Length: 221
Image (tube, rainbow, N blue to C red; front, top):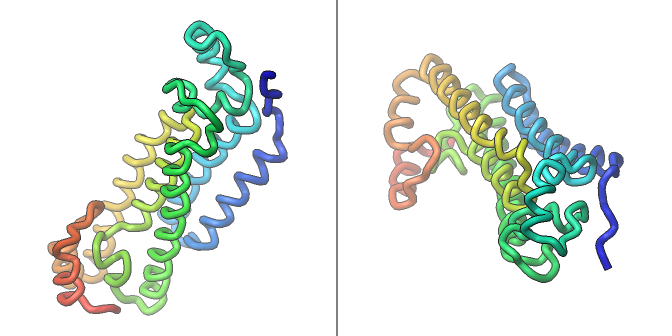
């Protein structure tokens, strides 16, 4: 029996979008225009994702001709078919329990935990007008942006759409620009202290072998 189409469920679009947006907001507590741009871009990605997951399956409509030719027995407007990696790779069984879905959940919830730990350190540093160098900031300079990227990548593993696949590289570029702007502001505010921190701490990809040395050079603030 074919799956019953699971779209037009706008209440689920709203509920799921609000859950992730409010959850991220509770961690980030945006204040500056830069914070709001970062949070707003993430929120737009989440809304676009759940709109196609439960509302209107634009990607499936656009790919319907190819999917029907490639997979003639597939009910392309079922919820399971929306797991496009599962569909395209010809995976069997329940798509919610395959390796990609499990891996996506690890990225999503791991990213949320990482985001929370990063913003806790940053929030304390901002309140005391000091430089954030402890916790996630001991290994990279921009863990908050890396966390957003990890979460979005996790969603792309679980439910890729044409719109979110197009948005993802744009948002990565945007977060990189915001990070560079943030660095210029930090350099203007903290001067040599930030310059020394930046020289020993990579921007986005940690050097795990030297994390201990960097922590010793820059104790918790």
